[in-house]
Length: 198
Image 1 (tube, rainbow, N blue to C red):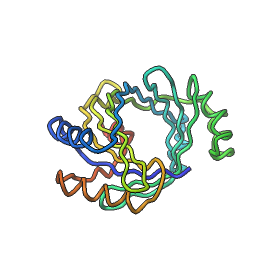
Image 2: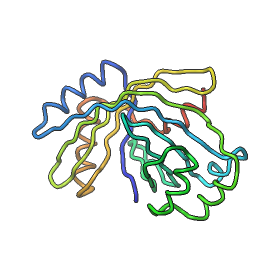
Image 3: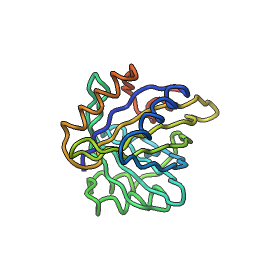
Image 4: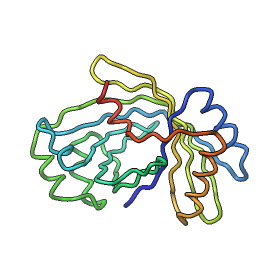
């Protein structure tokens, strides 16, 4: 399926402000998720060469494997890409199951045939707030944690708005209103890209 989300840079005070706004919206629903993401590729970089990223993420009590493929980013911070995910015990288990969820079979098969290595990790707490904007169901994600690459680390503060269901126009309108209200700065890079630059 195609994922649509906006990403913005943040700080601890900004996240607190946006969180207070989100929780004050009608019918807002909040959940807190402890997340540990590990990113993998084959030793020879097969997935990166194909514009794909493989992530194994612990989300509270469950572990989910995700493959992201292709996509593009707009100047206002909107990211669109193909995303497939399944519950899995490890990255290899996930690669074997992802084709059942629509992921490219050829790419998963090639990656499974080669040794996998962990590239980097991201540990963070997500406050996820479900919001309705007309017929669109959106999730406002407020992330605070740490990027890790080898022995190098950096703080992570990020705000995301993802379309979960419904119309795209109300989703884009909500993103524009959020960006304007809080003077949000788009984040063009993924967590993986930022961790690899450490």
